[in-house]
Length: 130
Image (tube, rainbow, N blue to C red):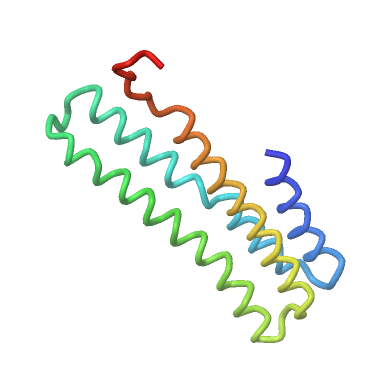
């Protein structure tokens, strides 16, 4: 979590120190990026637990929708910074700081999810007891 705050701090620093506050729009998108995945993951879990959709493949659609919107917001955060730079609204240094902050945030989240999956998946029992 510390690296996420560092990445967000770099993005905010790039927004504040260079010029106007357009970079905060990119920072807000970075903050809202994981929300669709969480919301649709909860919906999928509730649907599966309450047997609204007994076929498990039908509840996976909600997780896929959440992943789609999450990736859409992540891409939007990166591309919005590039478009604002191209339009001359923010400077190149601001763009670099925003992209660096976004990269720190997203790499931290990806590594965290991978580590979570590696260490929480149940291990198959060893037939030899080693």
